[in-house]
Image 1: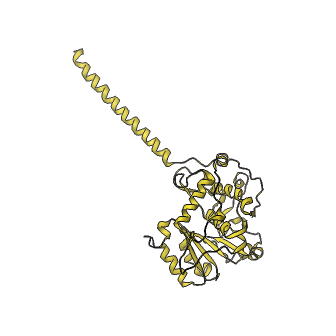
Image 2: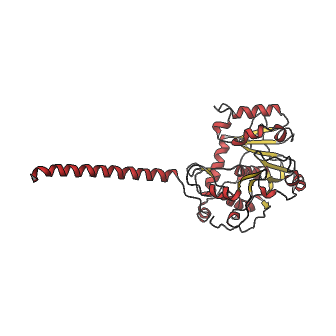
Image 3: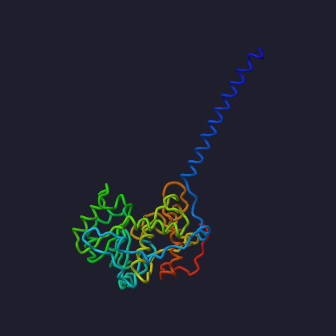
Length: 314
């Protein structure tokens, strides 16, 4: 009896073992898959050590970096001094409007309006840098963003499959039609080659591959690089330094024109520490801007940036 039962017991144990091995393999696979789809937050101190010698932005060729949407135009550097007016609520109640209007060239971002906010942000625009996600919001209000500033230049950026002529997306053609309707406004899109440069610049400065680290570059990143390309001196209004959110106490709306928008520091920190999906690395970008400041003659105010920006953990 005992001899006859042994094979059955052995077979039963082997089946359990196989099942356990299968379960273990499945759990291990899921752990690896999850770890690959998540990412660790950027660490300031590691970032400071990882970056390599980045390319000189001022040596980039504007001619192959920006494609004219309508007509045979070329984007030329034409400003000695520029100001970037951010969309930050830090600009509210500053009465900076008259001072901003006196600047040689004024750069704004996305769909940040001036109507109703002239006292604090001015009412003149030389360049406007627009993300693919903001194209429709800008073009839906032509009186605010197109006809109001004859002679201005709009620079649109986005994935090449959405922003280039001949792409399946109709976004390029919508921009082209709007440009034709307002011939006094020049419109350009960032070329595919230049989009690659922006990504490579991020990798050189941070040691992280943008796509592999699930990072989205912000409009602020594109705007800062474009400003350096176009201007000898850049002053930025309303951008907080990288260590601001580790010190500040009061809540501030993310946009000056959206009083109910999320708190800016919550937005920055959630994006910086995001582990799944794609996120903007706002604080990391600001740390890079702090490095660029003495190299490219960039200054910041409202709030002021100290020369020795501390890189505390967020």
